[in-house]
Length: 366
Image (tube, rainbow, N blue to C red; front, side, top):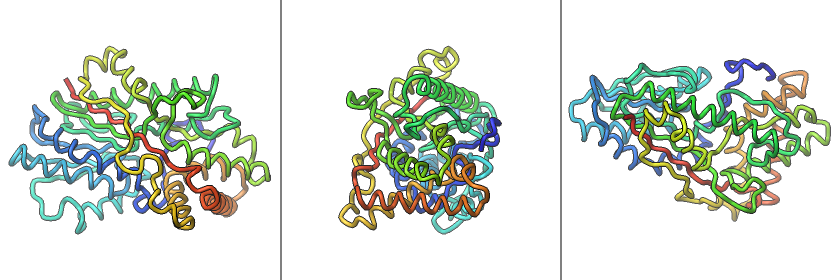
């Protein structure tokens, strides 16, 4: 995938079996249920309906668990208010699965009244709702993905936190601009008195890391680098392509998330900061699948399934397909890659554990 057209390079398009392999994403949402309820109660100046927009909603389970507490809280805090539940994501999202779940036995539409559900299809780096129409905006485990794939020379790593020099500076600037764009779009959409809740993976100071910060998932991405380098050394993956590949994402520190809100005149005028923090995940902070470490086969299966859910499409489009001559060969490369990743986790177990720090940003529209 070498096109420079952002519309051809969606960072999250085509995620594999996401609903069954999204433990970290669901943990973030579960930890914010009370926060969602509290923000609904504080929203003012509602207008004709209470509109909830979940940006980067994904294919179903996670976004349902965002909407349910918001709808319940709205019914309690704003009796009789009409509610619009809007799911916002890219065209490649599995919309059929999502709306099948929304209207199914475990969905929030079951037995409810005055709830209108809808989709907003596009990039959340563009405006996705009418101006001044959103009461509560949420974005879980999505805002760290870039607006498009970024290609730069990174011969020793596939992720941002181990970059150095010009490559790191370039990627940091891109991440800051995307965060600015995301916030400016939400400032247009939220009505005064509305709230935005962003919760995703973050980074914390760590003097032992080469860039002074420990980023969530450092074990996972270093495991991916090990497997990719091994396959490149064997000639299975094109080494030049690997040297110019990096996952197009950035897990912000507190300062990185806060700085644009303070320095940008437009954003400082639009938003009041309610909460902005990075803290350890409430469960299994040091190892997402620690409960299964006594069974190396199951432990490796869980990690491989989780990683494949979010990484398969990126690796396929940017590494496997450019390194092969056919879709069938790319499929075989993908299977071999994740087979080796499974073996790595069986052998080394928690050496490549998924450590998790949550970045939480709550903003009130002035």
